[in-house]
Image 1 (cartoon, rainbow, N blue to C red):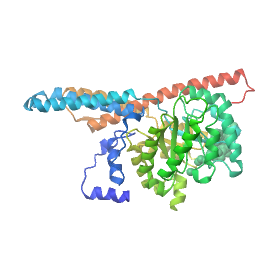
Image 2: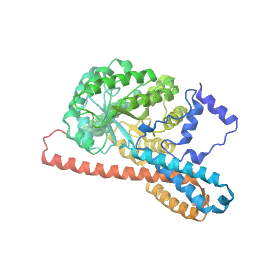
Image 3: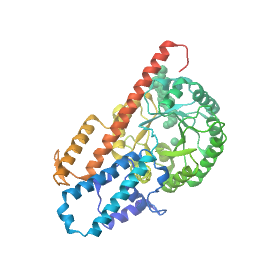
Amino acid sequence: MNSGKSLLTVFSRGFIWPSSSWCRLPSGPSSFRALASISSSTEAGAQRDEQQLTPEERNQRAHEQLRVQYEAAQEAGGKQSHAEGSVEEKDADDEKKKKKKDKAQQQASVSVASIPRRAVMYVPGDDEKKLAKIAHLRVDCPVLECEDGVAFLRKETARNLIVQTLNRAPWVRQRLSQGRDVAVRVNALASGLAEADLAAVLSAEQLPSTLLIPKVEDKDDVEHIAHLLQQQLAARATPLVSPLRLIMYTESARALLSLQKTLKTALKLADKSEGLFRVDGMVLGSDDLCADMGARRSKEADELVFARQHFLAVVKSFQRQLQAIDLVYIDYKDAAGLQRQAEEGARWGFTGKQVIHPGQIDAVQAAFAPSQDQVQWAQQLTAAFQQHQQQGKGAFVFRDSMIDMPLLLQARNILQQHEVFSKQQEQAATSAQQSASNTTKSPSKPG
Ligand code: COA
Ligand code: MG
């Protein structure tokens, strides 16, 4: 089905567009699920697999709890009107609330650690000097690159150097021990190089935390990848400490239109892998997509508006709050352009952005973390909301805008993101200090 057409059908039939609810959950709102179910003829909306709800579901759990609190507050404020309802209605309400509470508790109990990835930075795997630089960079997700950042003649060098880096570089172990990311991007399946890349990387003594797989076209590709992962990971002598995190790329028109099925298959296979791997998110491979569609890449990226929006809606339609990583800004010396595009991506609901140069890290990581102003807005709004609830007011005016429940949920998102990134920043600062003191103690040691 043509999903753009479906969307137009929806509008022409006069649906109401709840814009503030739409924005309320930057990672995984029910409204995204609703859109994806409209735009796909496959299955109805999101895949709900309670067993594997990711920890980022914390966000959603908080929302569930909030909703329960909100309903309780409404009930307290509206006892009079409730008194008019029958006892049976009240019992049914109580039962519903109890179910919601139980579900929120169940989600909390299956939480596992998540890794924020605001900047996803490629480091050509055949470049020893650039690889050593990672030790000193405060980047959320360094990617040891085998694919397009490496020339054909250097593929084997890259593969070997990456395995050596994983096994020997002190910063790799340090990052992993702090729950920070170390990713490897292998070559695409169609290149004929992926199997050798995977065999090398997955037999390394020290595995990366995340594996990036480019150019995943459809569910058949996912099945092939899952098969290779099963084979390689099951053959390891020592059991995995935690599941390998998988992030795949959407880089063609066909891949974009089959994304829902691709992701559904990936999540299902991850569930069945018994902890060997899990799916953390998707990346929009924008330059390959432009090449595939015959589009010309511009700084404004308006040729990619539909692709970015559609990609986001599908990724966020899944219950388990997958990460959605936005395009690369290739003009790496244009700081203003990068900032504008990073802020736009964050505003739209992307969780991070690909970067190619260390000079892009700070701007991107700042854009994808809430600013001080946003945090202050969220704190004040939350306090005002609670006050108004106690007075029995669901909607009220705050800083000249109408505020109701969806805005409170947006504020909650900001506060939760703030908490996650503040913690991440503290860890990165500690790591940078340790790395600096190690360098002072043994200057001849490779990074
Ligand atoms: N990772 C780690 N270090 C990097 C880096 C990267 N991606 N890009 C640049 N650096 C380092 C350089 O080695 C240099 O270090 P030095 O000051 O110690 O000499 C410093 O940062 C400044 O680099 P600069 O001279 O401005 O850039 P460059 O000419 O060395 O490299 C690129 C420019 C674009 C070739 C390089 O940034 C790059 O290779 N990026 C990744 C490309 C890639 O993997 N693409 C595929 C995915 S889209
Ligand atoms: Mg690509």
